[in-house]
Amino acid sequence: MDQEIALPNSETGMRLVAIAILQYQDKFLMQLRDDIPTIVHPGVWTMFGGHLDIGESPDIGICRELNEEIGYIPKQISLFRSYIGDQVQRYVFYGVLDVGLDQLELNEGWDMDLLSPEQIADGSHYSGRALQNRPLAPSHQQILLDFLASSESRINML
Image 1 (tube, helix red, strand yellow):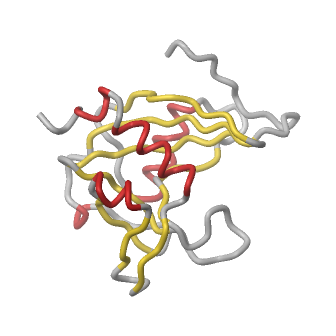
Image 2 (cartoon, helix red, strand yellow; image 1 turned 30 degrees about the vertical axis):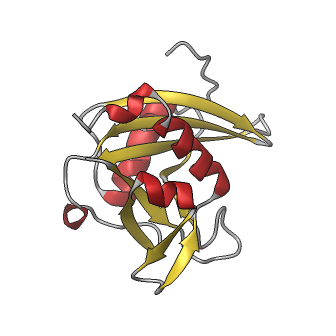
């Protein structure tokens, strides 16, 4: 990784998160966040991941989050990019999802599904659990669009 990695500590005002682009063939795993107004991105589609613990490195954090949220850790996970926004720094990792949805455990969130590049570009997706179309979080949509425009997006399309 050629980018400087900041580790979370109790003194920084910046929230540090790690999120994962998990690619299954030509689709991408997304989580429909719980529709709870007090959480970040309530009721919208995002990538799996979460806040880093104090002193936790992003690569350890993303593996912990994926294990907690879906019971799955890719065999190999690589840093795609770091995005710095208002009060948040996102470390975005990517890897291959080599199991089907039926082999994942949804331990956090309302729903999960595999979205095509067209659905990502469209910015919304139907949830069978919510029984309605729900938007993608704009920041997560943009990260996925950046990924789709990169050479890394071909990791599982060969």
